Structures are given as C-alpha cells and as structure tokens.
Length: 333
Ligand SMILES: Nc1nnc(-c2c[nH]c3ncc(-c4c[nH]c5ccccc45)cc23)o1
Image 1 (cartoon, rainbow, N blue to C red):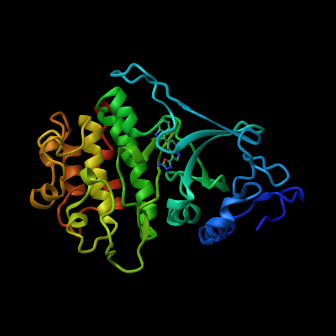
Image 2: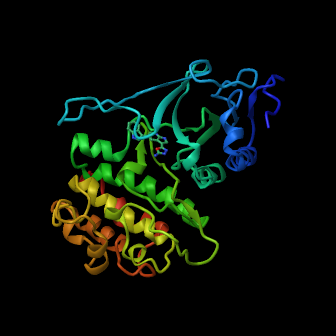
Image 3: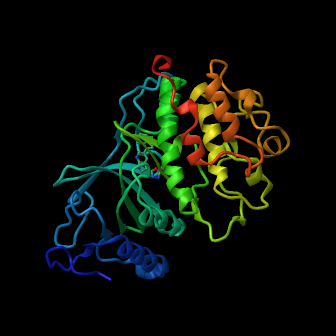
C-alpha cells in the first residue's frame, strides 16, 4: 500500500524497519501480474533514512537517484579495458541529494524470490552487504545495498592475478566472521565463491543471498542442486542432506582460486573436456593437489581442515578463525 511518505506525501515509497520491508516484499510477491503492470509510480520501503533521501514518497530513477556503470580502478590485462557496466544485474547507484553510492540490483519480478531479500533484511553483520531498501518499479525489484566498489574477488584475481597470502588471509578472516554469524543463526549461504565476495577499502563482504536458506532442523535436504559446481562440497553433490559446513568447504575452494588464479579441478580437468565436475567431486578426494605450490604449511593445514571430506569432522567457522594460518608471525607478511 502506498503509505505516508516521509513528509506526508502520498507517494508509494516510505521509510520503515526490516519488518516493513519484509511485509512489502510479501505484498509484491503476492501481487497479480496485472496489478504490478500498471503501477502509477514506484513503491517500496527504505531502511537507510540517513543516506537515501525519499522526496514526498518518491524515489525515482534519474531524479532522487541515478544508475551508472561501475568504474573499477584496475584494467583487465587481456582486454586492456576497465571492467565497467553492470555486473550481471548489479549497477552502481548514487542518491542525488546525499551523494551516497550504493549497489542497485535489478531483479525482474517474474524470477524474484523473497528469499533473495529476507536473509539480508533479517540478518545484519559488517561482513554481509547491508540492505538499504527495496523498490518496485517498471516490473523490476530494485534492491539497494552496501556497495563494494573494489569489485569482487573474482574480478581482482582475473585482472591482477593470484593474490598474495597476506591478502588471502585478510579476505578469509572477514568471510569467516560473516559465516560465523550466519551459521550461528542456522543460515547456509550456499554459494560462497570469489564473485560473491566484494571488496571495500576497509573490509570484504558477502553478497548474493539468492540461494540462502535458514535451517529448521539439523540437516537441510534440498529439492534441487544449489550452488556453483567448482566450489561445491561432496555432500551437496550427493544430495542426501547437508548443513552449514558446506560453506566452509566452498571457502576452501575459494582460497585455492585466490592463490592460483583458477578454481580447483579446472587445471587438472579442463572444462573443455569435462562439462560437469559433479562426478569428479563425488569420486575423488578433496582437491588438495590444486593448492598453490608456494602455499605456506600453515595455510595448507587450514585448507585440509576446511576441505575435510566428512562434514562432521570438517572445521567450523569459529575453529578456523583461531587457526594459526590466519595469525602469521609479522615477518611472514
Ligand atoms: N550478485 C550480487 N548481489 N548483491 C551484490 C552486490 C551487493 N553489493 C555489491 N557491491 C559490488 C558488487 C560487484 C560485483 N562485481 C563488481 C565489479 C565491479 C564493481 C562492483 C562489483 C556487487 C554487489 O552482487
């Protein structure tokens, strides 16, 4: 419903709390197509009162905010181009009044899942991209979030090559803090990988909660295979139920990608010859052979604990946060 705008305006956008945003998400999810098609103006709930200036219940593109391509600092050595434009459906947005820069993810209503927002609205942590607001306009849900203007770890590795161990340690500690928080709330991210970790000047955050689930029992048994094959744990491939430990395994494979520049398996089993890795992940031992040759003994031990085949024996986020690999003596750096 178009509630009271901030200053009594009758517009469709209002400030609210996470519960108001969740009510809005459920309202639009249940809206019939016909209703959604002819909305007179944008509707939505804004959480970030400080940095998103809603005017008379309006928050319109090219008025209260503008969308423009990401401008990254590094060039892609292969193309020589600065990777810009929207990454998938994620644009850079800027509030025209406060100048606040945000990520704006455009999700066509036909394939919108309330889960994409629920987790980000319900759970807040410094290593999870903060949700600032949600607007429905032109049949697309606009999700405004905290922007990682340094781009994702995938773009960094693709453009700048393998990361040094102290950089990997910096990213891994932040991802583990985010996972420790999610896992303590029985939430499984389900798609931990380099492109879902984005960088700011002072921290790294997890993004893309479209596959996230909150467990109601000790084990989660999916109806479908969720995640990205190269980073998938054996128990997910087996599809007989799994728990939060799958994110720890995917973090292990993500570290291999950060230190070698390629995901596990890809060098030994080129994608051209292997259309699917599910059988390999199921049959072979975890990809310790793909760990970088110059990997420190401590980090190698860390990876062994993170990619332990048996999830009950695999380390948890709190355990790994105390692992010596993440606390190297100064001269190692
Ligand atoms: N799938 C998804 N769901 N939410 C996000 C997201 C939230 N905040 C963000 N900040 C930056 C980027 C981003 C990804 N690649 C990039 C390359 C250059 C610049 C920025 C980026 C993505 C996000 O992404």
